Length: 328
Image 1 (cartoon, rainbow, N blue to C red):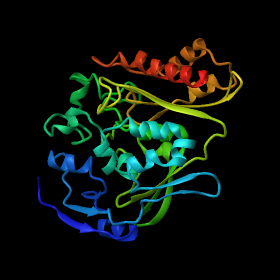
Image 2 (cartoon, rainbow, N blue to C red; image 1 turned 45 degrees about the vertical axis):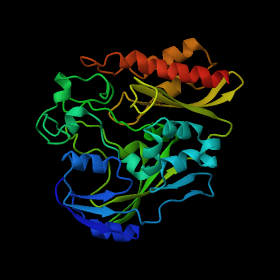
Image 3 (cartoon, helix red, strand yellow; image 1 turned 135 degrees about the vertical axis):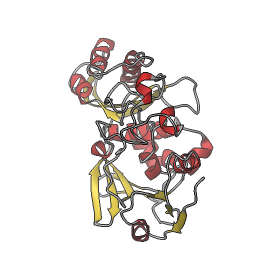
Image 4 (cartoon, rainbow, N blue to C red; image 1 turned 60 degrees about the horizontal axis):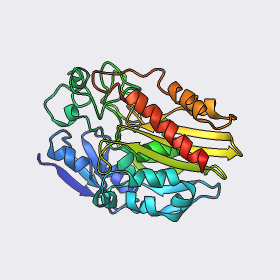
């Protein structure tokens, strides 16, 4: 591990001031991604600003029905919060499907939003990787790309899939990210926070240098809706999704009044599927409808040497989730 300077902040303002606008400075929250990558020498910050002393660990209901989650709320606390269990089951299930109990006890909401890819070519520190070293190439495109590589939102420069389960649920729910930076506070729509790789895969999010996530605000729950997260993976625990779906449905008898559908494991960012939602809205629930709608989600998918199976698997994740929810 390289040497680095260390600062401890007591407030968001102190954290931002200690960070400045230097891209080589990192905020430390739970550290479950940052510390791993520093040890691997993939991330090389010359300064780390510890924000564990910042009071951002509260969950509060806003007057308009939305839920405001502090960036330092742990994954365990968020998953077990009764308001989340009751109103956002999809989020609670997604969080509990991720990592292990020990990691969920440490990992934070803000850190999970900022979670970096699990592509082995990014993490090995030596392979060609445009995300780690812009302009070097993408070893994954011609290499082994079975499990943690995407079929949606890819480019000639990067095909790494986004790893978070929590973010898939949040993009299905709809959310806003509150940030504090050198220029003050601002809000970012969750759908715009994570960026497609395009020809600049090293830029993964919409934060400006020195900006700190302070809260994530979930949209108010759909009244009378049902929701669930379905994660398909090689083994049942401590494994990243090969394909997953976050689905929220509001029913009127057997008719789908409203639907929200997002996918994980298959996209380079948490992937909302508005075309699926439009195909479901106002239609009677049926296996045939679900299969037709799920196909729409992958019309623009690009399969690589080893991950073409993710297209039918991703469709299955949507169909199975919809079938279970509408049968309830």
